[in-house]
Length: 100
Length: 390
Image 1: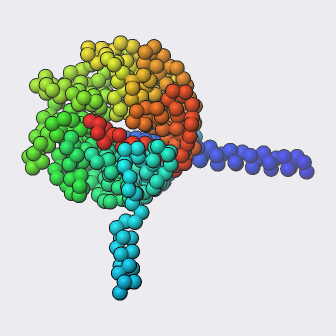
Image 2: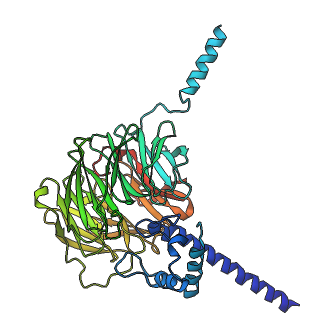
């Protein structure tokens, strides 16, 4: 009984921290990606990140750009701050279309 | 009859914007609320909010200039919006969406023209400061992809001129608007790879462009355009591993103290010290992260620096005599912008993630107050109205 309650508690804890992490990444997208790509992602110094433009790229390709940047452009590597899974999740969101 | 007369009087005075203030504007300013698309009009003497003005569009990257009477602020938004706000009435007077994606603007020497530079479709548009009617349209060079080059680093210069850079085509242009019906353009090609921002010295003589695509900066002497642009600091930082840049530095706000000027390095966690006679680097000051703004206190004794993600919770203060960091402040995450009071006894700092603007005493380096603001970014005080390049 106590074990089950503990297990439930831990699961809820994991779910909470996952939600918190997603909120953190969306904040990063809006404010930090947004400083070059625009807070509504329609582009700025960096290109638009709207689904119309990202159609040509796969989620895996986008995740590589997010993690490693694009040499020769101002796009920096975000690998120090995002895991591969997080980058893939973000790429998926962008391809679907998101208003951060 | 008398009653009707009084009633009419009351109605007409209400129509005359009863809420407008009768006062000077010399100690007023605005705080951009980037996520809400609004701004606050503030009184810097009493450190209080006077008005909140909404409906300014996407202000994720916003800047502002002032009319020469310092009553009106012109705000340039990311979505191409140009908004004119009346500080005394707390009211949006007019708003035009002039481009797809704008990056900044400037007001002409005589205060009659507002210039806006655009990422998309590139180029510069000029508007009447009074009516915001279009006066002239200067398209940018086409890139091989058939788009106008992103236009950056727009400043006003003496002689009713504007100077700006073309990021994709590596140019600097000087636009003379002495005759608004016949704009005169001087184009400098090969002016440095990927100019991304520019500044003008407070005397209006030198324009400097920061370059993303190469080490160093481009210098243009506006007294002697015939000499063309020259590279300065071109070997600065060569051979050193460049660090990733999570937010591009801004060159607005020429940090000058005596013969020394202070610039954010790009790809290095340093502030560069440059002699403004020889244009040689005379020092580099290691700092906490990639600097975004390096701004001198108006008396030149201190330079305050903020940083790009992930170091944007920190502000450092440099003593310009010893060239040392004398204080590291941790005002909070998202310390985006700093603005000094006109004579420098205070500095106001936007703390985005705390929804606060914090006010510091620049002598004690201690916080002395704060004002709430919704995701604050740029802070612009009316003292800018009478300064070239601001």
